[in-house]
Amino acid sequence: MSSVEFKNVYMKYAGAGDYSLEDISFSVNKGETVGIIGSTGCGKTTLVSLIPGFYPAAEGEVLVDGKNVTEYDPEVLKNKVGFCFQHYYMFKGTILENVAFGNPAATEEDIKEALKLAQGLDFVMEKREGLYDRVSEKGTNLSGGQKQRLMIARALVRKPEILILDDSSSALDYATDRRLREALKALKDMTVFIVSQRTASVLHADKILVLEDGKLVGVGTHEELLKNNSVYREIYESCTKEQ
View 1: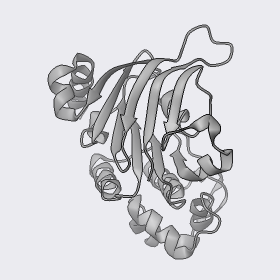
View 2 (view 1 turned 90 degrees about the vertical axis):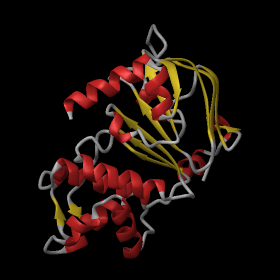
View 3 (view 1 turned 60 degrees about the horizontal axis):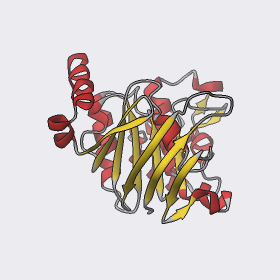
């Protein structure tokens, strides 16, 4: 597992006039679960994309285990971080092949273990061919929740030190989402980032980062933020009404 630290980080996309992130600073200890919450377009995906070095920071430092991500060999950093995107990519083939895309060296038992953690093993084994059941192009023969669980398993099968779930449980019902979070929380050897727009997905995190317009406007536990942070409280109340 790995620690992560942002030191006065600014981020601007090429050709953009404004910063997407401004003066972001926080630290995450090894094995912690971190929630990142905020409205659409506030910079959540941009922030987590800096951890595996998808984009360089314009200013400041992003550190993994105390080392600037720009100093890592790209393959070494890639192997440390498992990233599950908002938009899943599924190809025509078996379920096993789609999950093993995250780690071609994975055994069948590795695949099952990852699926179990991702809360997807039960529905897979109920299929006629189990792991060898066919997935159509873009996964059109699967529900949104099933596809998300397979994509989470694809990230988990790599056994990364840092797992980033970027709004990748939005299609799960609340009970499945809760079981997923509990399973991930039990993994003591993995640092987990959960990006979401709903507070239910992050309220049990060790710490929650609240973003607004590219700025970090709150850091704390659910209870602390509910008491002291108006932006978080507004998001929480809005999500509660939706539920």
